[in-house]
Length: 154
Image (cartoon, rainbow, N blue to C red; front, side, top):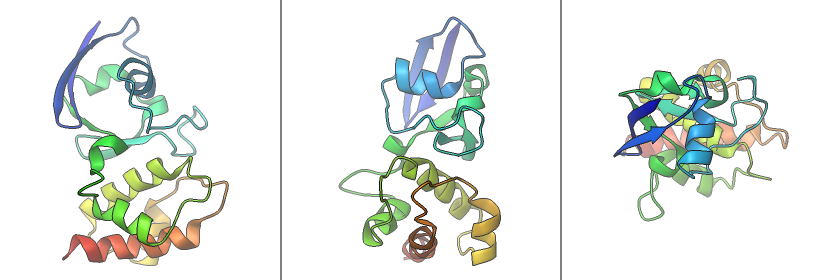
C-alpha cells in the first residue's frame, strides 16, 4: 500500500505491506525518525505520542492507514534547536528529563494540551497528561508545563 501524508511539514509517500502497521514503525523504521519511542506497545505509556492533524495519538496502536492525507508531527518537527517550541524550551529550563526516554511523548502530549488549553490548571494537567515516566519526573514536568504556557503567551 502506498501511504501519502505530510510529516513535519514535508509531503511524504511510503510503501508499506500492511496498512494496519502501527504508525510508530513507519515513522521509526521507514522514515528513520527515532525521536518517537516505543514503550509498551499497548497505547498505555505514551512514549510513542505524536500528533495527527493536531491531535495527540499513541502511535504504537494507530494504524498507519489512518494517517493517509493527514499532517503528522513528531518530536523532530515540534521545534528546532535554534527555535524550540515553548514546551521544549520549558523542558530545558526546568531540566525535566532524568533518563529522558519517555520525554518526547510527554512533550508531544503537552503541546497538544496547550494548543487546546493555553493556560491549564494542575487538574487539567493531571486529567490530560497521562503518560508514564518510570523516573517520576512529574513535579518538574508540571512546572515545565506551566512555564510552557507562559512562554506560549509571550
